[in-house]
Image (tube, rainbow, N blue to C red):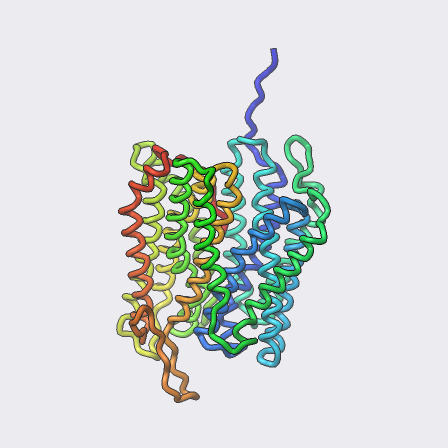
Length: 510
């Protein structure tokens, strides 16, 4: 008689190795993001709206290239080689940002385009592959996987927490160099210890190359780099305001549902579930479009019209971007307990209703800051505690919406289309980040005493935005309306999902 195998409760060392690698990569990404828009407006002397559009294009493309990286990984490179290629490109990109900040307006913009291209392509190789390897460490169906992703998610937030505190505390060029060093630490650690720790519990090495990269796909990589560099430079090259990156991302967002839903092999139930995914992806665009102002307009607001003085010391504006990851780390266990408490009593909201609540909380955050700036003079500043409150409320909204995203796609998508649907979900994030840049460009300009020329105020759907109160009202009305519509649709969406209740979730990676 054989003895039953005891279920394992610990985690393989490979999880903590990937935790460390990802933590430093996120340190690099969020450290650079924390100071990026301030660098463009203060060093490269760009206008707010121009810098905001570049910020949106950059973060939007960062979420688009994992489609390419995931494809090349599955077909040729394998996870390990993809991570090394991606890490090397991102380290190069951060070093080029250091050079861009070093030369300033004398050629700094051209170097910045090359830097952003390297980071965008590098992220496409790195981001989808390191998270995939977490699941490969465990046998299929292992109950520890959910907790493993929770631990991994904490590594992401830990890197996102302390990177703005370090990179934002020094001159821009040194901040970018610190982001570069963080990426080098991640890359060197991975290269040196991958063979030792990236082994499944059956003793097999994971993430190995599938086959040699053929010449056709080498040209695909080179072509992708050239296309992204061209799109980033398009406005400058042709002296036009035509936003080709926006057309590219939004066009793909419209085209993908048409391609997938016209697949004749889909059953009625499969088609209904895919429709649910697309509807939720649409609402996610409004959530992240408002939430991602953290790296754009809210950073400009923190820099210019927020009193950041504490006992005679002026806190850098970038420090506010550490509030969200710290709040997520602290509040995630609380929300897990709340959902568990409600589930036992059969009161837990459905996934669409949780997402509607997330949108409502983002609206509440902007209501708080709109109240603070109402009647604010041009030279007046608000207390930093208003901005802290906004970020904490927004973090609560993130915990209601973000963790269920990938889980919803994995549960609703037909197995044969699971990768394609996951790519479409990331495409929605790309559209949201591009939209965030467009919305950030609506922030009203601040008068410059050295330049007495009349100010040009932006307009949104026919309404001119002349002050911060009107600017924040855009986000309140947009997210509150989206929350209300999604809440009304939630019961219908739940029926289309053909699920009595969505149980459990996988943490969505930032």
